[in-house]
Image 1 (cartoon, rainbow, N blue to C red):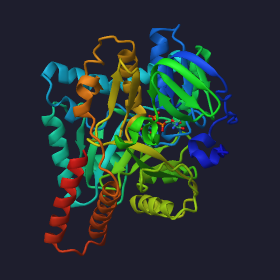
Image 2 (image 1 turned 30 degrees about the horizontal axis):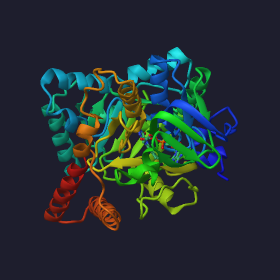
Image 3 (image 1 turned 120 degrees about the vertical axis):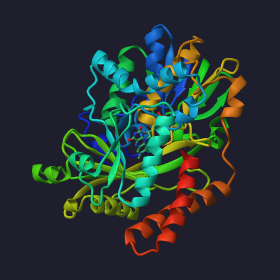
Length: 471
Ligand SMILES: Cc1cc2nc3c(=O)[nH]c(=O)nc-3n(C[C@H](O)[C@H](O)[C@H](O)COP(=O)(O)OP(=O)(O)OC[C@H]3O[C@@H](n4cnc5c(N)ncnc54)[C@H](O)[C@@H]3O)c2cc1C
């Protein structure tokens, strides 16, 4: 029996006023128009936009645990008007279409705000932008300035991404050794558990049925099976992202990666004066650990960094603050902000996200088999799942819209070439371990500051190449 103790899921679950009581399980054989597997953001947003366009559609959501138990209730709360691989997807399009694509992506935050207002959902959203990839070493500075040039070459402007000098960076967030970084207005902070739980309740009010503690064990032709029941449906939507296990062979398309987060106790006003973040922008440094932080509504720092990959692509959702991996995150946080040396860490948790082989997320629908799916957000799914839920809803309803014309929407005719499969084990595990080791070697080299210039240059060149391959 899974432990739904709020503290064991995430700090965000701990802030919920509700007691977590799982909804009833699926205990019979039912019929639906659309059956969605997974009550995370992808499944819930897809249901929301299907219901909005066709309120009489019979939608059943089948969740193995409880709504938000996956990455959606555990993440760093960056609601980004962005998505992994956006320039890759849009680069080849004619200018007008390319700009339309960017506007759809940047428009995610406005769309979410509008739904929150319409449906009376409060998730502590604050739109303060993002200082991302702040450089702390000369090599990082050079890489991030190149990155900004690349964004401009890809058709983006200073209104979307701009350089912060050291003084401007310090005005926004004072990181030890901060040298400069990229700022974008296209990011907001949220409490993700409030959003995912609020969306689930909103869907129930609209007549969508959510079954919990009902793991789907098998998906057949227009039919799925759980331990105690089954659903026959014209359309089946696996919305399981990092949990993509053996269900329909999705495992080979989405690599499950762990990410881990710590939360501090609420900081005092004087501590905040030292750190900054007055307008609550999200922040990260340019290290390869892919850090991400936010100032929560109740004045804590929530700070995470990439974790591991378990051999065989296993999912992990049990974490304890005593796990040694949390000390590593704590150490990076205290190194960024030395004034936090004696601050208590009250929560530590983690979750599993999904990485697509070509590092770009996808929305796929095959009208013949009735299978639709979206995912592979690579750690940027909080906002992207809204866009992909909207895209998937239009695809399922077989509407030809601006969204379904976007290059992230695949039909069977195009998806074989777009959706690459990950290599079999042990290649995946070995590659991931090698990447982690090379990246932490680089970090160590910079931190110690004693390596000769040629060595730093060589390591930076290798790591930059690897990072670009994953971008
Ligand atoms: C620690 C962490 C930090 C992150 N930080 C950010 C961030 O700050 N910003 C950002 O944009 N993205 C972030 N992400 C990524 C983002 O959270 C995810 O991309 C997004 O939540 C994916 O939503 P989803 O609905 O597709 O998947 P999930 O939320 O994982 O939902 C999948 C659901 O499917 C259920 N399920 C699985 N198997 C079955 C089955 N067989 N039968 C029935 N149900 C099943 C699971 O229980 C789960 O509830 C982070 C991820 C993690 C793990």
